[in-house]
Image 1 (tube, helix red, strand yellow):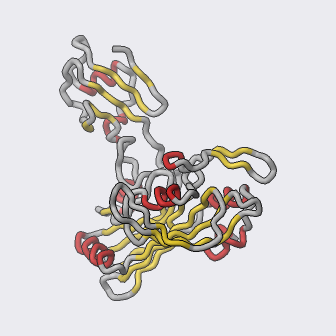
Image 2 (cartoon, rainbow, N blue to C red; image 1 turned 180 degrees about the vertical axis):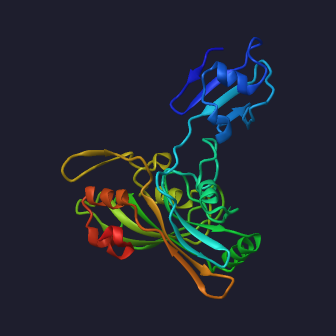
Length: 292
């Protein structure tokens, strides 16, 4: 079957006359051999190695890879077996279908460590991620979470006006969920709000789903109905390449008894989007040097 190429992947259905091994097939198709090493090649939905045997009718998928950040991943706190790093929006926290280039993999190479992600942020979301250097540190975080001693604080830019705080409590994927919301500011036109979000529970996509359910989906969050573009005060239309959600701070007790607190500086594009919407920079001045 001929190659089908989409924006993010190549698909091929194996024919009887095709090479019997995956590496040889990719060479025939002029696909980058690095894709196998990156973990971006799948046979019938399973990640495959170069010497994987192929049978007619099987489907081979090569996912488009992500480029690694040019700069090292910032480590913002490290103590008592815990490490907090600032994740760029474009990276997944852990390897996914687009390959192994992820926060954990890049940090492991950067620091020569074996790391376990304790918290996770979606692709498109930036901010502080907590990792454990040991299983004991991971169990310590799990205990702190069970005892409600693990605080996470996010900044978000939502579409629509929100002038008062609230607790969002609609179920997420059929499970109970709760998010505390503080309304920090709105733009002059009231078409956007700056929110501080504190998840009480930790459901997948909880903050994004809760914002959408409350009628204020986050800018850039196409999955949950958020605007894909923003119109600046001067009329310019800006395409959003990320969700305007940033994990600003985490706080919990460390195993040595002292508080472990880590903050991830606001990325410049987050502040610029807020300004483009007509928001005042002063509303973000308490959240890092990048906002000043």
